[in-house]
Length: 459
Image 1: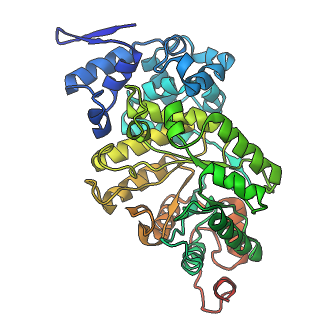
Image 2 (image 1 turned 60 degrees about the vertical axis):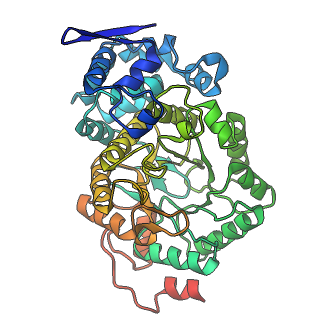
Image 3 (image 1 turned 90 degrees about the vertical axis):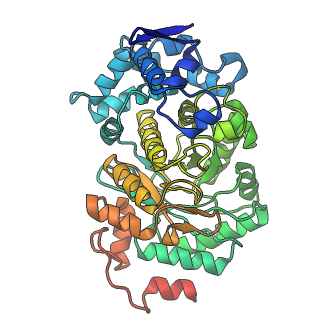
């Protein structure tokens, strides 16, 4: 179906829903690279005006990627809850924005609505929002998940302790782990990106992390972010797997480029569930996403990168994950050129995922060839904190020496917790008190060289 809008007596035509969504998207380099972006600011405004008048029901009758050829589209349509959609089914996209921002729309309202919205509806309304709107709406959402602790409660901020090492050296990893724990990091997960995706190496890393966790009775979960098939093989060999990780995208072909399908993800979920390692809950999947992944795989089908990203959230929520995060600036300036685009995309991803009911974190990051620096990441970090992000990354010095990108440090997490009075997960906060590392989860206690954590790991 074609869409048309007039601005200053000039007519703008959009051939189909996919084109309309792309033209209405705030400017970013990835969409320019894909030749789907609006050619002018005026065309973008025309598309946004046309999109604002579009009935939400349109998204149930017209897909951006055909139902017959894409399993993600089939998942989106087949899992849609018409009963939960009913309260907003009469609205246009613009009216949905007003509804989300209304004072009468509460956290509970948004929780009930999440499975009534499709990713394309959410992508559409976000294209009409200012950054302020994205923060205000996301801050209303609360998505709580549990494995060995409780993540996502209001007034809490968790962190992934990311102790990567370029050669998977146990001593280097252990040093980063203890450094992060001393700063109160690691309640979301202690998660390593392995330098090599070799099953034996992955098992050894899992065993090392699990021995640290058990020795000090740390109420958190561990993960080696290997390919899901490697994790399944490790489970079959008796490895102590807590979380099952996989990078995912918003189209079937994107996921195929990652070497997975919905069936593969289901197999990983069932393998993880078979171990029954959770103590306070059973959410055990960990997904990472990022704007631009579909385009980089040649699998975007003319869909803008933001809409592709939000479609990935439909994949994630089907598996009830413990953690999801967008590595928003990791792919590079070809997709998000500068800090303005990175900040906007980070707020978009967080808000969209929360509206769809996901426990969303953000890797506040950039690559060294992007037009961005650590001051820009401070800005995004603070904005996401006010928006209620579930977790962020904790990396020694904010510099990942294995993946070669810039993120957030243990100190950055401490800054945000103290600034906004956001404490760690409650079980982890109690552990910090028991270890005499912090009395309130926010401020650190002095640590001597004889502290049990230091002497225990180095021995």
